[in-house]
Image 1 (cartoon, helix red, strand yellow):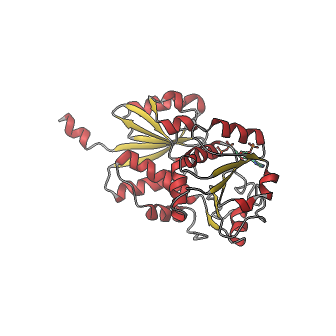
Image 2 (cartoon, helix red, strand yellow):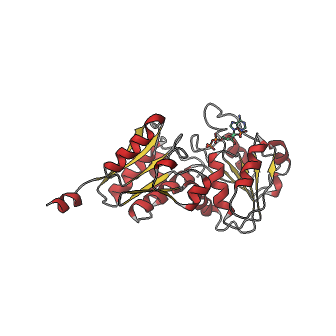
Image 3 (cartoon, helix red, strand yellow):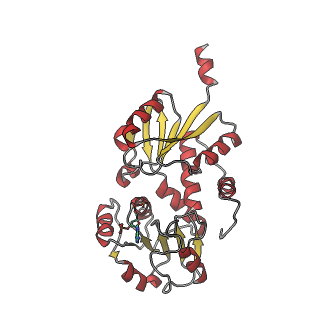
Length: 289
Ligand code: ATR
């Protein structure tokens, strides 16, 4: 009968972006669905901006289990959702949508994904001094999420200092923060326990650039770059040579995916397996883990 038919229907999951061809999410999630014997498929869709609302309506009509958003739709999706959770609303970006019985609910797992990755190196941020480099969308998700973890300070440095100032003003959680120019931050790197690089500098075509030099950092500083291709940016290489404990963007990517998977299925997946899936996809390099 009809109920039985529904029970045996494969569930669709998706990622929407433009471009979308290089997304590693489909392989990562499909591997997990098969590992946990969940009858579902995760597909990438390249959607034009003018078609975003139609695409979302279509996915809803098709009974999608949920979907991810990537560049350039994390903010643009919001008007087309039925509900947005508090953290995602404050960040102003949604990367994960859950179809809850016909209601599309938006979440942001990027910031918490970064935090969970950082927790692999450092169990608590309480009392720590943190520097974020960059003031774009990724910085915003990370900043608002870390602000809730009771660090001593989270400073922001950016090429355009006014953008760092606006970000600090926009933070809805109580946190002590200052905005610095890249030059000023460079001179005070020894103040920080954690330095987080969130700009595109270090990725092709800027693979041989870095947003600031790390000469002044103290050994033992945790230095993260959210870029994962290349696995080790110039910035991370310098950090490692200066005695830093480094982490690339694989951790954030894997944990944002793990948190999305958990929202969809109730299962927090095997992140070590997810790392392996990603390394295999990136060509089997095992650099700087
Ligand atoms: P994302 O959503 O990935 O964070 P974004 O919102 O476009 O991307 O933000 C890009 C970040 O990279 C910004 O902090 C930007 O600095 P500006 O605010 O001054 O634009 C930074 N960025 C990009 N190109 C840069 C460059 N050549 N030098 C320094 N910073 C750069």
